[in-house]
Length: 359
Image (cartoon, rainbow, N blue to C red; front, side):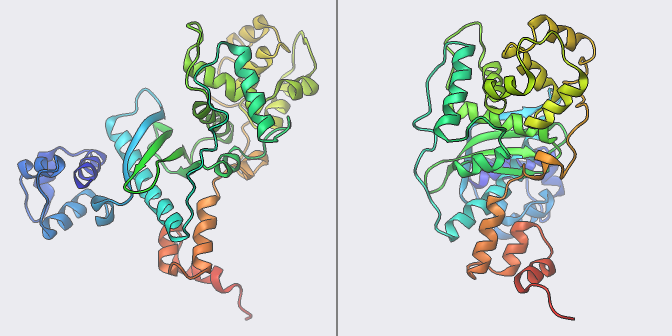
């Protein structure tokens, strides 16, 4: 594991083996670093500390913990994302995950149950089947047809670990299965803190689709567009949307689309696509919109939902933070450890432990 972590930290720093050798103190050769990364040799304690300082990572990170590897890794990134961007993102996620898994161990919270077992299918034949599967998931989870207040809370309740953190600018998120040193694999979805709530909710619904639908049985329907179709159907159920917008519309005003996007917490572009999918707007009307007044919507969100407003007030991970405070309340971790895990100053933690004091 040390070799994997060293390689990741070096890529994160954008250093070649020779460059790392030259800036490490005490000195070490590029050949030795190559052997470290290949698992053929371990550094002395002094060299290990020097590598840690040169790479700007902790000894805990280099020596590893529970996270062995990321499997079935899916990136949400722009085409310009570099290998260094990906390495930086992986390093950040590993650090957050190690704390998450540690707090679960401290509280002895483990579940081998697969929350998607009864829903998972190998393939779907077409678009109508995808919509049907989204309705089935809602029905089995007793969600009704109303808008979902928080996709994050829903997925956390179903056993997925959702992490929101600062990622490199060209990466919006990732999803993967995490192999651990002990215990069963765990599934993780990571979203960039900078991502707007409209895209965040859709991405989470898209990742839910990947955990339920393995593939499509239709050469004309590629997997990623199928996952997007599921996400739209899951967030904007046909019956509810028709009740809100009416049927067989000849057109729709800007005001109505902005109202609908806020009703469901989705982007204006996703709303326009869904209006076409359910037949409220014709295919020609949707195509015309994307060629004219909506041509910039996929890049720039019109009238975005602001931070703390509407769905944005609820769409944030909460489970990890709740577990840290629980462990602190039961005196299973120290205030210093809690401050490190939560990224808060120690005085804030201590104030939250004792509550307000009389002046």
